[in-house]
Length: 217
Image (cartoon, rainbow, N blue to C red; front, top):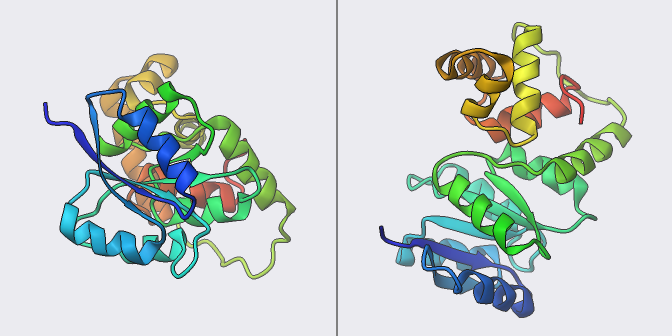
């Protein structure tokens, strides 16, 4: 199997070097490029065709969120994993809404780094419970001002339960096992959830559900 092609985007060279040192220890991953801001990352995207992008949130010239807004409508649809710190709670919600496949703390361990990248390349969102808890705390501090009325049908109790599992990083097979239902049924419920919330990915569903108070962490 060819290694996953990884593009690292962070304005701190020490962060890029640290990630490179870890990823280069495993033949499943190949670092094909580095960028110090979102603008350079978008240029390298066209040149290098990465399988996954590790993206910082706060960068000069063009931030990670600004770059993700462009990537959201890009035909290549390259999965993005956001590199974050614990003081960026509000930005995490914005990143989820833009389709990020997961988050990594910049001091994450080797195993979690590998697992998150592999999940993102497979199209799965791997959302760490401790980070999601911080996201929810940030949203809970905000006043409910200017929230739109929700026209979609409300989620059923089972759909909410499945969404809680998803928010904690469970895969469909694991959810099915814990709930005593088939994996096909879980996927059918997920499709219903996406339709009701007007989203097309697990990460977006979790972000919207947390923003509207449908699920709690």
